[in-house]
Image (tube, rainbow, N blue to C red; front, side, top):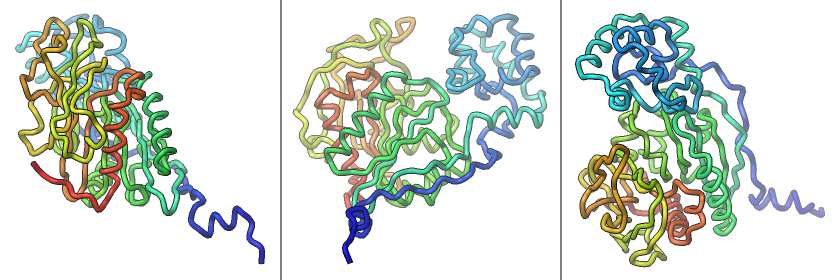
Length: 373
């Protein structure tokens, strides 16, 4: 019998087979659904409730209306999804006693059925059809955004990752649907790349699926904005998966030339990198170095080569150990985060692309050893 080329490809396992799409169900397990109103509530949830918003206006009349439009949005993406009232207070200068009074009054506001529906509207259960190829490394690129949308970086990273997959012979799937983060879908992929994800984007069941995937030996790589939120409402993500809390980036100017230094040339993610290089980007600072909790620092920045000064001249210096990229062992999984990558040009910068190539290759290799420093 003469085989057609299509049949032959399928027989050899070379024909990409999609992960079947499923009809989405209403979201009922969003993380903040039943959270009492307080100063720790996401600002978007306060703004969505007329009663909660009235409490704030009663204590500090007209103050929240002075926030920039980007901070007042009740439809995602919006800064209101990545800030709580405590963080907002620092922007519009609430006094500590005012924050305490707002918090006291907010806790008396009932969470209604309408509030719960509004809170869940920014999540989804849609399970898209995704390409999957037998005999290849399969990479899932996820870029759902509820917080700050990196409108230049996200498409630039998508193109860089597709080009990388073409060079490496990988199969790559792209989605911005939280419903893709489920056990049946994730087990088909060797690694997940979080492409500038900002804001809380996963339901409780989706969170569990990601935790199980990584702890069970899956690979996870996160890019730039995926570790750049000012407030997190999922402690495991910030504490375990990323391992650091963003504090700010330069403002004067935002993008600066700086000298980057490879801190661990023996790490697989450093394969093919020179000892140092110069590039222009937005440089993140963090509350503490993730080295303190067992991260393996791969890339650092020389603070003497740029101006680490944020909004209102905030001091963003971290000292000699100012990490930009690192790996962590989470359960049996291999994770890597690079804070480089706000500018679209960063995804064509040879050394940065080489580092991401090596990091994804390492994370997607289930036989690779994740060594703790």
